[in-house]
Length: 244
Image 1 (cartoon, one colour):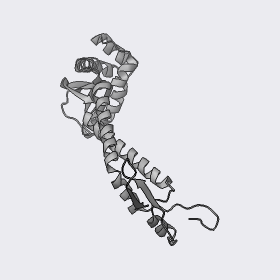
Image 2 (tube, one colour):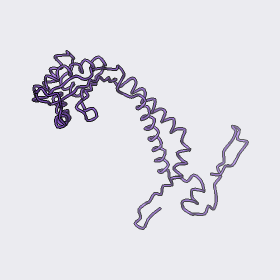
Image 3 (tube, one colour):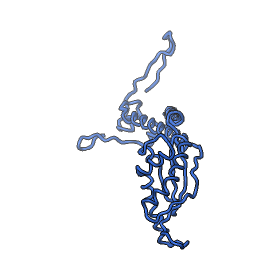
Image 4 (cartoon, rainbow, N blue to C red):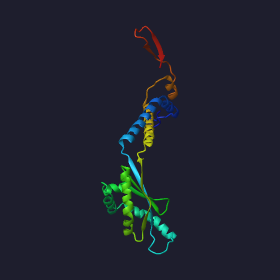
C-alpha cells in the first residue's frame, strides 16, 4: 500500500503470521530439537566443568579488652568490614601466600578470578567461595585462604579478628555448566530463529498464490483464473485441471 508521500507501507496481519507459523511448525520444531541437541553436546562434552568449595569465617573489630559483650556499633562495623576483607583477600601479597601455602600451579591473577566472598544474610559472617577445574583444587585453595587470611587481616586492620566458622568443603558436584539450562536455551534459540526466518520469508514473499490474496489485499475483482494442466501418468493419456 502506498501513502501520500509515495512510501511503501507494509501491513502485517498477526493472524496470517500465526497461520504461517502453524503451517511450518514441523520444521520449526525440528530446528528447536536440533538446537537443544547442539547445546547438550556443547555443555556436556566441550565446556570444561567447574567445581566449588566453600568456607565460612566470622569477623569482628573488637579491641583487646576483658569484656565479652559486643555493642551494636561493633557488630555494624564488622558487617561493613566484610567488603574490606574481601579486597584484602584478593591482593597480590595474600594470594601469593596462598600459592606458597598450597603449592597450586596458578598465578595470583588466576587465583583472584577464582575466589569470591560475600556477607551471609547481612551478618558479620562471610562466605568464601572458590571455583576451580577440580573439587580437589577448589578445596585446597579454600583451605589455604582460611589459613592465611586471619593473620593477613589482623596485620592490615587494627583490632580485626577472623575466626573459622565452617571448614572448607567441596561437594564434588559440578557447579557449572548446567546442562539442562543450556538445553532449554538451545531449544528456545532454535525455535525463535527458525520462526523468525519463516516470518521474514513470508513478509518478503510478493508472489500472488491465489485469488483470495488479490481480493483481500487489493480489493480487485478476479476476472479469470488460468488453470494448471499437468500430466498425471507417464504416457500422457490423462489430464486434470487444478486452479491456482
